[in-house]
Length: 260
Image 1 (cartoon, helix red, strand yellow):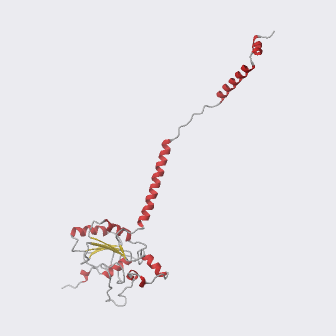
Image 2 (cartoon, rainbow, N blue to C red; image 1 turned 120 degrees about the vertical axis):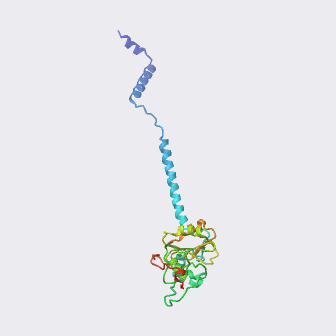
Image 3 (spheres, rainbow, N blue to C red; image 1 turned 90 degrees about the vertical axis):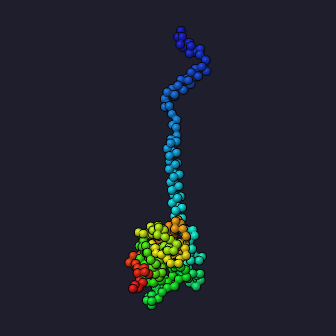
């Protein structure tokens, strides 16, 4: 006689037996599988790194702009190179035979003769006043942030421009003591610069480097500072590179004037 368990097993429908088996297998699978917890994205870190990237790109862009901006001369500067941008471009054009000095509107920008070499009494002549280049005297004016309280000799100052200096001049009839002091602060202690009064200049302030000039009646004009920063030892605009500003003439016209 079969037991009740055997009887029940025999009498149970086949479909019920299969379903029970599947349920048992699924339960076993759930017990053997590790529960996976979905991790949230680290939005804090993502946003932080994104912000750092934006800042880095901004700094790179700013640096590129500064480099580009430094390659551009200040606005309002008068240059005497004609269709060329600077001294270097004209020199290259002359060297390559593209032009001659006679083709230049202002050929003096390429003239650098020491006129007193053969004749010690020779005095160079200039087309513009104050001059911004051309033939000059054999001795340069000391331009180590030098502030002169009286006019200096044009031919010596132009030689300083050839060395890469910037010469700031002011009209003593238009600039008073406080203004002179304010201008001198831009020059004192700044190598490759010099400053002096210039009689009958006709404009309060004039700054000149080799082949370029900027003039203004406003002693607070920010372009004066921009001119200084751009043209002091500007590699493309220095007619005689690697030349010194020390050890030159340190006297003024007043010092050389006879007394008694």
